[in-house]
Length: 68
Image (cartoon, rainbow, N blue to C red; front, side, top):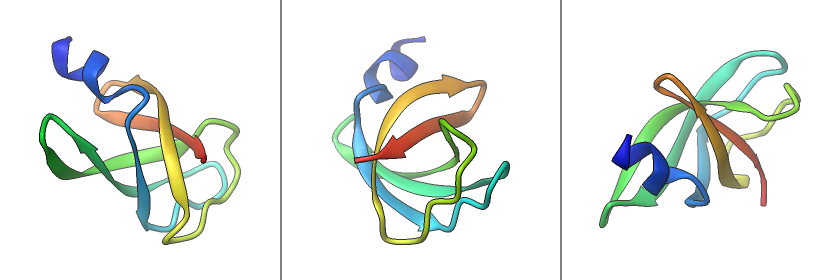
Protein backbone atom coordinates (compact mmCIF):
# COMPACT_ATOMS: atom_id res chain seq x y z
CA UNK A 1 0.00 0.00 0.00
CA UNK A 2 2.83 2.40 0.73
CA UNK A 3 4.13 2.31 -2.85
CA UNK A 4 0.61 2.80 -4.27
CA UNK A 5 0.14 5.96 -2.21
CA UNK A 6 3.59 7.17 -3.25
CA UNK A 7 2.95 6.61 -6.96
CA UNK A 8 -0.31 8.60 -7.07
CA UNK A 9 0.32 12.15 -8.26
CA UNK A 10 3.60 11.00 -9.81
CA UNK A 11 4.30 12.18 -13.32
CA UNK A 12 6.04 10.73 -16.31
CA UNK A 13 5.44 9.93 -19.97
CA UNK A 14 3.83 7.26 -22.11
CA UNK A 15 6.40 4.67 -23.20
CA UNK A 16 4.13 2.34 -25.23
CA UNK A 17 0.97 3.94 -26.66
CA UNK A 18 -2.17 3.48 -24.57
CA UNK A 19 -4.89 2.38 -27.03
CA UNK A 20 -8.56 3.31 -26.60
CA UNK A 21 -10.11 1.08 -23.91
CA UNK A 22 -6.78 -0.70 -23.51
CA UNK A 23 -3.47 -0.65 -21.66
CA UNK A 24 0.01 0.48 -22.60
CA UNK A 25 3.11 1.36 -20.61
CA UNK A 26 4.32 4.52 -18.93
CA UNK A 27 7.57 5.55 -17.31
CA UNK A 28 7.08 7.36 -14.01
CA UNK A 29 9.45 8.79 -11.43
CA UNK A 30 8.76 7.69 -7.88
CA UNK A 31 10.62 6.20 -4.97
CA UNK A 32 13.82 7.83 -6.21
CA UNK A 33 13.90 6.01 -9.56
CA UNK A 34 12.26 5.87 -12.98
CA UNK A 35 10.00 2.84 -13.40
CA UNK A 36 8.10 1.34 -16.34
CA UNK A 37 4.56 0.26 -15.42
CA UNK A 38 1.43 -0.91 -17.23
CA UNK A 39 -1.17 1.85 -17.49
CA UNK A 40 -4.58 2.78 -18.83
CA UNK A 41 -6.21 6.13 -19.49
CA UNK A 42 -8.64 7.45 -16.86
CA UNK A 43 -11.24 8.15 -19.58
CA UNK A 44 -10.41 5.12 -21.81
CA UNK A 45 -9.10 7.46 -24.53
CA UNK A 46 -5.94 6.87 -26.54
CA UNK A 47 -2.71 8.50 -25.33
CA UNK A 48 0.22 8.48 -27.76
CA UNK A 49 3.81 7.61 -26.91
CA UNK A 50 5.81 10.53 -25.52
CA UNK A 51 2.81 12.37 -24.01
CA UNK A 52 3.35 13.62 -20.46
CA UNK A 53 0.99 12.03 -17.92
CA UNK A 54 0.06 12.14 -14.25
CA UNK A 55 -0.98 9.10 -12.19
CA UNK A 56 -4.48 9.55 -10.74
CA UNK A 57 -5.20 6.06 -9.37
CA UNK A 58 -4.15 2.40 -9.39
CA UNK A 59 -6.14 -0.75 -10.17
CA UNK A 60 -4.09 -3.68 -8.95
CA UNK A 61 -0.75 -3.37 -10.78
CA UNK A 62 -2.14 -1.04 -13.46
CA UNK A 63 -1.74 2.71 -13.17
CA UNK A 64 -4.64 4.96 -14.16
CA UNK A 65 -3.26 8.07 -15.84
CA UNK A 66 -4.38 11.33 -17.43
CA UNK A 67 -2.68 13.75 -19.77
CA UNK A 68 -0.71 16.39 -17.92
